[in-house]
Amino acid sequence: MLIEIEKKSKTYRFEANAGEKILHAGLRAGVPLPFECATGTCGSCKARVNQGDIDEGWPEAPGKENFKAAKREMLMCQCVAQTDCNLTVPSKIKAFREDDINPDHHQGKITDYEMLTSDVLRFEVKVPIEGTFHAGQFFVLQAPELEGYRAYSMVNYSQSTDTLEFIIKKFPGGELSNWAFESNRLNETLDVFGPLGRATFHPDEGHDLFMIAGGSGVAGLMSILEHANQVNYFQDHKVELYFGVRTPNDLFFAERFRAIKTQHPDNVSINIVFSNEPPTSEQLSGNDGLNYLTGFVHERALPAVLEGGGNTMHYLAGPAPMVDALIRPLILDSKIPADRIRYDKFN
Image 1: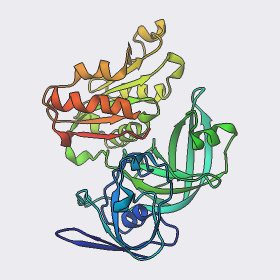
Image 2: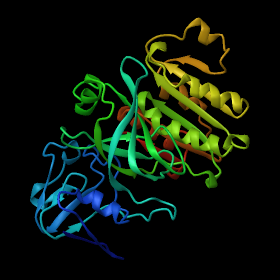
Image 3: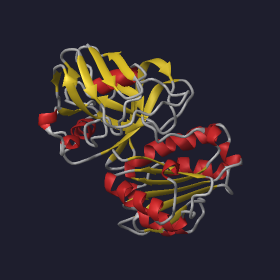
Image 4: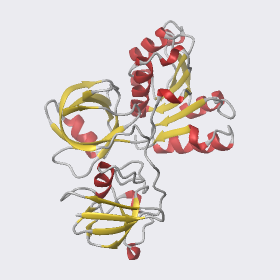
């Protein structure tokens, strides 16, 4: 099916395969359509159907809460074209970076499966061909017996790899998390689409890094740390990370944090914030080089933000309420320019 989107300065045309989400088809064709979560929850990929027939997909998608059916408003990440279509996309279509990678569909197999805590597991998905992605990006995943895609940031980074590393947190009512936790899914297949997302790291930008993550939201920031470490970025740039979990038993990736801190002790600051219990006496001894704090991660991180931001890029990742609680004070109180804040809030 031919999809046509008319903007004042340009008309975009691309083909959508049978059964393919309109957003996926456009991004795969290199059209920089607007989106954030790509899973129906945020509403960023809103469009209006001027001509043509569509299958709207998930009828109760949260991102459609204020849509007007009379105007044929829909979510491109959920809709499938049944005929050729002409759409209006109200959001600005921003050009990709020159080095951006067009996403694509893959059939992946789970090749590693490991419990990190009682409610967080790590798994790897192998795809048929090697590719690359920007550190901080995500893929959307779909299990064969489940409807709809869910978004997960990669933990790993490589310039060329056929393996994607993810973490998933057990979430009450979450269909994919229930599927992942109910039994060992080693060798199970998944439909994957990506890479996606703009909360990315690019060494050529030359920024210091300030990172705030809650729970499994740390995944994409781990990828950024990995990429930065591979190019010896912290030899000349600083990073300050605040990572919030509930209790010492909920902490994961501590060994990876220590390894990065050990390599660049002067330029790397790792702060672990426990919201429900205090750090252990061993943690408070300071022997591992990490800083342990108590409270809510956003409340402990904000006082450390440099007013005006300096030459710093700020990365936010975690539950939507946490990210929302950070964006306003960063911009209004700390005077951070909006283009120095990158975030995902689907985790």
